[in-house]
Length: 320
Ligand SMILES: NC(=O)C1=CN([C@@H]2O[C@H](COP(=O)(O)OP(=O)(O)OC[C@H]3O[C@@H](n4cnc5c(N)ncnc54)[C@H](O)[C@@H]3O)[C@@H](O)[C@H]2O)C=CC1
Ligand SMILES: O=C([O-])CC(=O)C(=O)O
Image (cartoon, rainbow, N blue to C red; front, side, top):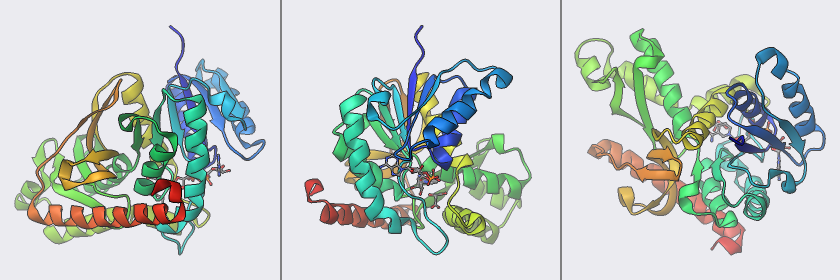
């Protein structure tokens, strides 16, 4: 069976980590693409030289031409700039919108059948714009944020309850900004919802509220610590889980930014919701019932995404 092909558009901190993970998991042959000359080639060669030790058999290539992504089964997009301390994700919009245009056109020309996972921030607006620029079917273009935000929430909850992260499930929905919505009713330890655990005396509402707040600002906490850029290990792992679900038709149910057409009362917008990812891309959008507070928070988050999409349209009239 021929190997799958994975194109990583952007070969910076997340791109390099994606390549490492995809190689170790032998998900397919890997092309690292970037506009910076030498970076993708250097990372591809370095990673290839780890193959004999690690024992993976995949081809790794660095490229500065979109022709090299031809026929990719999966494209993961991290091209653009990350934020630095003092910036919000939204400050990246103008620069990264221009990058999405180039990337969308490159994917449309050379890998139109790919499943595309966007990571570039501000995530929900960028995945919307990337889909518009590429013209690919909506179910083949998704954004990575919810898996990461939920993983952060799961990590903090596991620490709080002193249980294995494996047994903690969580959903963070909405846009990938400060208004994201960690939903505690759907967050559990081995199926026991967090509100029940509070009643059982495992924690208090105040402590869980603090964890929710820390999750919401989880990206900023890391930016403040790193000072030179943003998180890359957990974001890369999260996108690989999505790619793997597509490539292996695993049909995992994951929170991701997906194109909504009326679900949750939202139309023609990418927002984080639970979806099933399989061989056809987004195979199902799962509409869970939100309590009035969660729904109100979700709507606030949706409004924030709407504003960013409106800003994209005013910057690039071809999107209007
Ligand atoms: N969705 C999410 O949950 C997360 C999103 N991010 C975002 O991911 C993006 C990438 O982050 P990092 O990898 O840390 O940044 P980075 O700066 O290490 O890498 C970005 C790469 O994109 C390249 N690039 C710039 N313009 C390009 C173009 N037109 N075509 C191809 N490549 C281009 C740069 O040369 C650089 O190598 C940022 O926008 C960041 O905010 C980061 C963490 C989580
Ligand atoms: O905070 C940032 O700029 C990067 C990001 O989206 C995250 O780590 O959640």
